[in-house]
Length: 351
Ligand code: NAD
Image 1 (cartoon, rainbow, N blue to C red):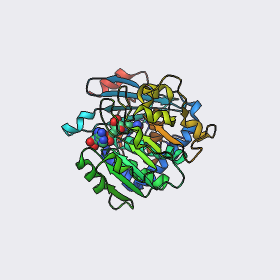
Image 2: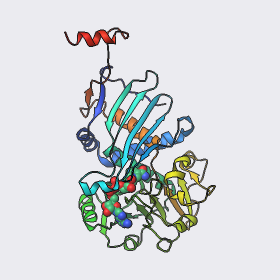
Image 3: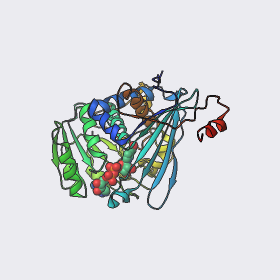
């Protein structure tokens, strides 16, 4: 199903730096990149049962989390290393930073090493908009964007490209973050409205995205703020003890998830009793479960980020860099003439 492009030299691994990732995105166009990553995610979710799946492996500290996210479709194996440290922005660092690798299952050899901080923002936004394509009310034009940090502009542009949103209403507890997002979004063809409260941002919005960072349970949305018929795209609650929505909203919503075994631990649904009905998004994409069924229904994508989305993004990058200069060749594989003479290779290197 997936094809692995032939590398120029088997001994070298293509490496995409942050600089080259940015070059690649500009070369292709950000909206097209996210549309294409969404297409890859949709394709991979439709063959969900083929994949090795496991909840991500998380190492928590008082200030954040470091996670490994592996998966394989039997032909390729991928993993992402990612952190989540809400305090980091106060120290001039990213809340989320990541890198990832794709390998050939047949040989076990790496085929791609890449930065994934920019790529995670692209794939998270692509996944959000893809879910909304199936769940948001028909003809939705306006999105409230609550939390205007690193992910926010990517989210706004993916919803424009994939769902046809033409207006975003921004809100952040830090007005400087809202001003930054409004500035960055100028010139992309969106009407951008800066708001001074969460309530104000939701006026007239058919889609509500929450993308805030806090290492604790927060209540970004309360039940009285949510009218019938909206779609909620809840991105920021993605760790044990880290949620964004009041429990009463969950009780009124039809809830859609990536991989339930991971979402029960990390998502908004950690506030619910075991056994609460959920729908898995892969089944919606595959046509075996229903997405939105009525105008009054509140749909909720309880997003935590799952390894298959990163796999889809990694295979997108591997194919997109072919024939471009947006990578370097890394000497990270030992390649002795005789595969058993690793020691001889080491000795000869000193000659
Ligand atoms: P960031 O730190 O750059 O931005 C977060 C913003 O939220 C900040 O501007 C902050 O001022 C704002 N904020 C905090 N509390 C708020 C509140 N009560 N109301 C409004 N705004 C508030 O972080 P980021 O990189 O944009 O990530 C945001 C969240 O998304 C993080 O929690 C991260 O872990 C999560 N995330 C999820 C996925 C996923 O796949 N679901 C992927 C990437 C990031």
